[in-house]
Image 1: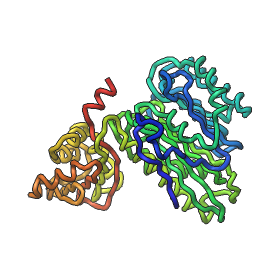
Image 2: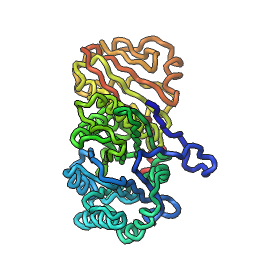
Image 3: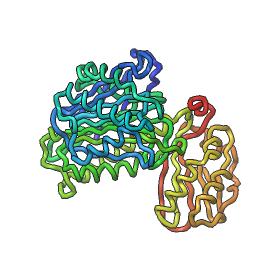
Image 4: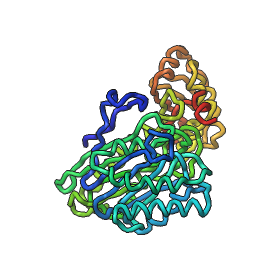
Length: 411
């Protein structure tokens, strides 16, 4: 499985300095990303993904009880299990906007459907940005014809750019695999940098494949993929109102329909897991103001659920995350977070490792030179391993440090 991950780039660079801007799209998919006026020019602020034929559709959404109008609309349309297009805007979330917001989401879909000449119920809508502001629906409507006209097979990168809010770089991954001896492409575009908490985040993700997949099986595959990727990312512990992952499979690869009984099903799901995990890691590494990416691994817990609880307690602790922004290691804050997490543990049995360097043995300082521990903790990326020595439970959460820049971005 050959994965095209995209190059980590700084969007402030000039176009000549951006060397990897090609996003391979599956057969029968087109994309676009343009400026229409939701944001100040020349920033791209609307994106479109369209399949040339009806596609099986799957989706997962925020667990927040306050949900944006586009989430409500997408949940409603997902009941059909079919789709043709996704239209989205960045800059305004269309959340907490009442009936006017829901009407605006429906108008976005309707205008897009007319421009594409497809049924309105096949068009899904997403928004991301500031909560509570009214949608500039007239500006959006005026821009949709140009957005549709710009859609092309080689415009995935522009769509990824248009999805961004506080992201510092576009996020995209593509891979290819064989199904029934036929080449299949799987591509994902995502955005997310702040309001990121496991159980979906303030993120949007669009997955596309030309594989033929049963709609119910596609939903199961997506849910499993999200659980091991986007549901394991934390930047700041805040869940959003707009989190959406949509997956389109248009079948143009002409394979026999994939489902759990197909011999290539496991390989297809593995590819989905690889793509979603890579996108999730890109989100964690691009956390608002973040300078370090940290994988928190808890093992030896009473069960997997308790390992998950403990890992999230550490990954979401502001004291732990701010300690990672400094030059000193403060493993005591990790111990504190474990203690209040509520999981079964005996502090005298806890071991903590920064990379391969053991900082804590049996709940106390290991005696290792502090400089050796700090050398790991000062890396751009490191693994924090916590062994509770209770049983075989294990879980990972991907997170980042917390710096002053996060506050500047969000004031």
